[in-house]
Image (cartoon, rainbow, N blue to C red; front, side):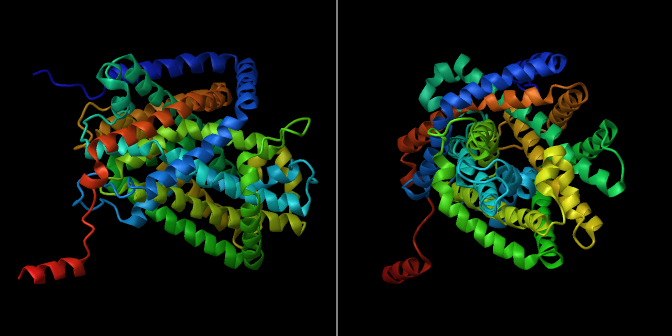
Length: 525
């Protein structure tokens, strides 16, 4: 019998070739490419703004339906099997995967974008715009974005853990809808290549955009310039960390890093509250939550249709945020599916909806509150500073704390680990997706995880060096549109599989209580 290769080149090579074919002209003609792609993306956003907004709302509805209908109790695996991770470990991994280091940037500075460009009828820099800015930052990390991230997961998890299909592929999850001919043919291959294309592109962009979060803070701490050499050193350290973590796997690598970072982030939060303006931050957090709930529907569905002129930051950025989040939907769902064996549909969906949301709101309240306090007291003209060099503002804010140098160091460590857990989850998922091994029984090969990490790093570093990263980011955002349709395809496929198996009857935990079983035993005796 012929032994299978380590990797399925039928889907891996086409995706890699397409990425290279896209990246080279983008790098050679960066300004013209960016102009063209931004024009296309702007047109799509203008025409389909309402669609992106309703997409988020509908997925929240679908998440609640799957969680609290008869499907919610369905176990992803053997009903007698216990989950491989504790709830805290499970939530920590989903938080690290869902938020990454981006929350470190948006939590501290997102409010400034709204304060400088508020919705129509609100004055820039006013107290109302500043308060709305933090509320909007919380909204960005709310229920819609995590519903986008998780709603492909039921189909993938059911296919892998209940159906015990060997390949952890979109094409396999779509089989109930496509049928064997299409799933094994061009349609299935297209789905699998699109998955790899979107994830590898997004990972390269994440690595490229994530590095400045660290390099700018190191620059301020050590009083050195931000250069490509510094970026290269940071990237090498970062790649080494997430390669080792991905090599060790979920149990020894990703789980330990994620849980450690939650503890470290919690300690950092307490430090800011005690060393910084704790009372103001707590008050501002309360006001931000109140503003969030007051404006939630407006944030969710507003398109500024009756206002003339350019859209405000809130309107335009919300559409972009949902479009960009859609590009990550397949990765987040596949990884969530992979680690959810033994969990119910409800546990998987609601943990992803609630745990990252709660932590992101705390991070936004604390980091954003610190920045707002420094602006209101006149210590830092933050609204002017962000117009010149946005990333350089973060260490300036942190340095206002007692032991400012220590605060910057902790910020760097937390951001680095968040970046690491995001990318090691990515490399782990890509390796599992492209592996020829039976993923219902095996972990993805370790050497394949390292290979994937190397490829992503090389692409990102080359683009950072010669240009082309910004256009690739727009390409990544554009890919969200077809993924929207894939999301609904996967939701329908999940429902169809569970209906065919009557899984709400045949794949649920024993609901009898110990008292009831004791009474039945006594009666039989």
